[in-house]
Length: 244
Image (cartoon, rainbow, N blue to C red; front, side):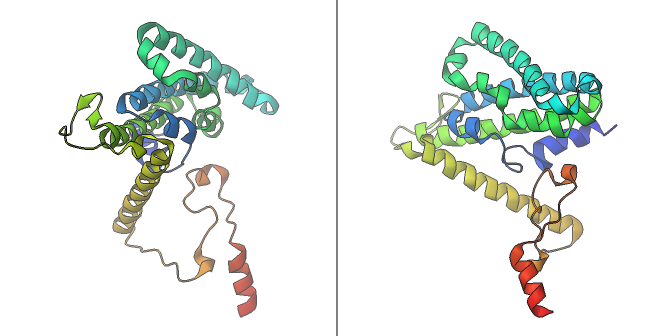
């Protein structure tokens, strides 16, 4: 059994689904036009993550490997239906704002990835905390991106005006190109912070003078689950052969 705090930290920081694994970009780019939309979408996804992880972990021994993906989708669809009914009943404005992206949680690659890579191979408690951690990481990322886009595009956060009236909103930020730009900048900043932290903790500074030192799996958050193919870049192999 893994430490709950480690699982939470893993989902929020180490393997953040948005900034590290770069999963679930469809709702991330489409929904985060405001902080409230991002927060609502994140909470919905987290609820589904928690429920589906626990359920799949409980029944994993009864699911044949050959049909595990369809089984995952059926379980996830059940929880998505429950969440959609609750949102439509108690938060109709949010339901209207998110629209089709709530049902699309069924095929969200974050939830399917956690079901395949973690819940199907671990116990109920670990799967629950994995769902909470990944859900919190996704919610924080969605809210942060939505807050930045809303602040720069509308001059407000959670519909509260934060910038003087003379400010001219940058409408590009709340459009699709602005979503890509904002996400790209945040991913770069997040990765830079991770690299600096790794350098401080290990005292090792990466040296990229030689292509042979690069690993095709380096930087992939799922590397430890697949074992890391260790596939060297073709140019590295050619360079080694030439030296020989």
